[in-house]
Length: 215
Image (cartoon, rainbow, N blue to C red; front, side):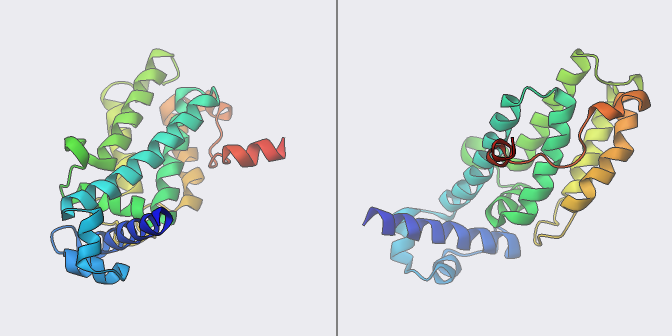
């Protein structure tokens, strides 16, 4: 019984994500979400008392994915610039491959802040990227041109180039995962100086389990 209930809940989240992405939060209705999930409105209300609760579930899914990724990258012992590179790869991949996470970005663009006004997935990603830049600056990894306002400008260009607001209706909008490495080959000389670019991997990191199997 519990397993069936969890499957229904998951279908509702998936259906809500699809409609939030396609139509926007304001236009999606609970009736449409229930119909897309193949359940009654009563079943929907059993799991989610409101559309806000469904939006929170979508936002929490995206936040959980980001948290898991950050924990995994911290465990590698890589420096902040490498983790920033990996963070941008995560963004391109998750927007392409995970419809619920893509919807979490769309919700943020629609002004839906997520649980307890957390600001949504876009703001969480940007906060982590800023933190990594600050850490890289403190560690002496950044070139003089990339410090201060230069770093902020680079960060804004990265985020809005990879995931332009309002483009999360489709998996292919923004920078494609396969283009991320080429993007970093252009940006690294500005960020760390041309003599130090060879220290960094510009291709997406392998999942931890895959790396262990290959060792």
